[in-house]
Image 1 (cartoon, rainbow, N blue to C red):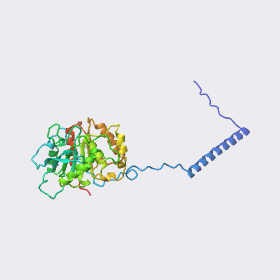
Image 2 (cartoon, helix red, strand yellow):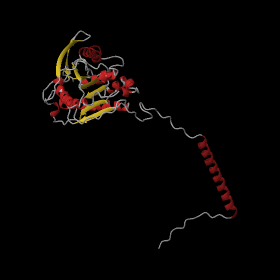
Image 3 (cartoon, rainbow, N blue to C red):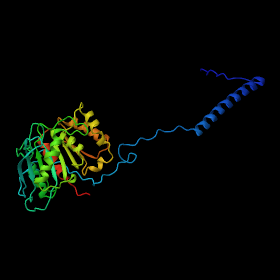
Image 4 (cartoon, helix red, strand yellow):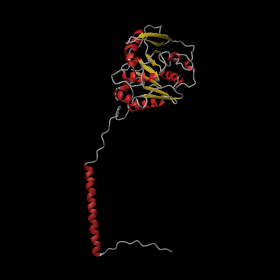
Length: 338
């Protein structure tokens, strides 16, 4: 049987023990004095935390509600649903094809949807949705009744208005081909599309139709290339538009820094949120060629605390989605709010 090895211990007696105890006592007193000094020093001058940084918006990080009540965003129609844009036995509006001459002297064309009953009450005024087409298309795309590649905007609105799920509105669909651009404009320098909107399109529409000629009565929406019109023209001129809707659009990684830099004054302005009667809206398909670009833009929008609706749908860069986005957003446009 093994025995544990004894652990040696210090054996002191007499004078040696007294010397050891005196030395230990002196060392303990020194350590205690240092600890006391450190404690007193900490009590006198505690480390100061860094001053908090104010967030871009809100009260110390607490977001504030918008001035208009937050609307309930309806669910999207199913991808294979055709009923919401089918021609039904309901009152119908009409589509007019009109021409105007812009400030450069060029004759241009627009499609204009007038809601049911527009001609029956000569005193009633209507809000206006300015709805933009995509690249490679023109002003006829949104009213095309092609089953696959048509916008069917007029029947979508007829059906919603008949069910009281959308406000009666005028829809103006201009031809922005050759003007809409992906490059964000410099602050204070309107691009060609914005100049045409401000100098020609809006004044012409207000002069020829019974519009609610105010920012509260104007919304701006667009698909793909038309989404750049919404972002560039709309964010640059929130004194003209109170609702912005982007369908399948966004900035690529090389243009995103320009977008943030050139719109930073708008994005970080504490008053910007209150200018949106409906939160900034962006929708993309999960197989959409513009999905990543849209996500980049929304990251910037979220970074600055702008109220927004982000919608991810099935499908891709196609009319089956854009019709659904119009059907969804038309139901929250022009809310009753002071």
